[in-house]
Length: 189
Image 1 (cartoon, rainbow, N blue to C red):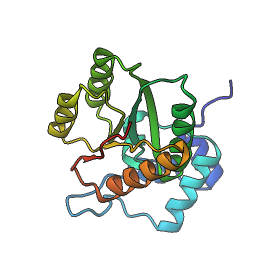
Image 2 (cartoon, rainbow, N blue to C red; image 1 turned 30 degrees about the vertical axis):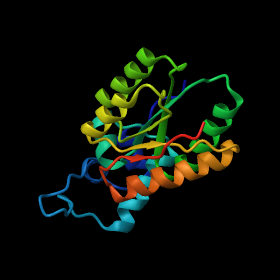
Image 3 (cartoon, rainbow, N blue to C red; image 1 turned 60 degrees about the horizontal axis):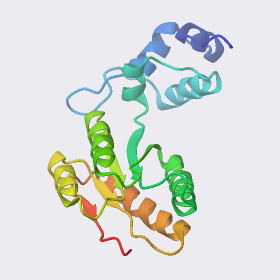
C-alpha cells in the first residue's frame, strides 16, 4: 500500500511552505463568512489540486470543513430486484458528480428493518434520505419529517432509469435549496 501523502509532501510538491498548506487545509470561516487566513485563490486552488493529485487524505474533521460531501441514505425494498438495481445505479451515477455519497440499505419490505435503517441514517446525520416506504409505515415518514432531514420518496414508474432521473433531480434541487421540507410523492404500485 502506498504511503499516504502528508502536508509536508504537498508543500514540497507545490513549492510552498508547510504553514501555507496547513492554512489552506484547515482554513476556518470567521463569523462574517470570510476565511480566517487570506490566501490568494490561485494559490489555494494550486495547493488543493496538488493534494488531489497526491491523493491526500486529511483527517475527517479537516475533510468535513474543506470538502463537504453530501451523505444521502437510500433505503430500497430489495437488492436483488432488477428494477431497484437499475434504479440505484442510475441514481448514484446522477448524484455522484454533484458531491453526493449514497449509502444504501435494503428493507426487504420488513417494517422493523426499515425502521432500523431509517434510525441509522438519521443518527449518523445523513444530509437527506431517499426512501421507498412500506405502505403500512406511514408513521415512519412522519418521524422523518419531524427530524428535519429532507426526504424524497421516488415515484415508481415502469422505467427505473426515468424514476431515478426524476428522483435525482428532486433530491439535488432539495439539497441545493437546503430546504428542510420533506418532498413526498405517493407510490403508484
